[in-house]
Image (cartoon, rainbow, N blue to C red; front, side):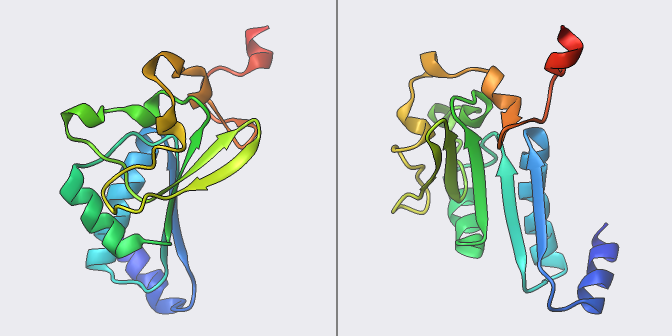
Length: 152
């Protein structure tokens, strides 16, 4: 993959490369964008994730945010439980700015500390409010799980 990306970057130097994923795919996209940045060194890398679990510890978060501040966003749909795993209690942190999707719309939450998550978005919820149902829907679309039509 890195060889293909390097070739495309060389052929189209002005283009942006956007990595994205949902759930485990979001975690993998987060790790992959770091590899591409380190090994291919394109100028215009971006990351947008949906329902991502936490990927690294505080040092990882500081490093990632130093490279991708303003070019990385993670979308959390309302009470998505997966976005709170693994727990911060055992040393995991989220990267980048959170875009919290609720019934009221989208809210951009960014912490003033490069290694801390904002407490004004999805972290304002208690674990008793989290649900796996919200992990299946993003931006008004069902992106995982059995479709409602098939279930009926």
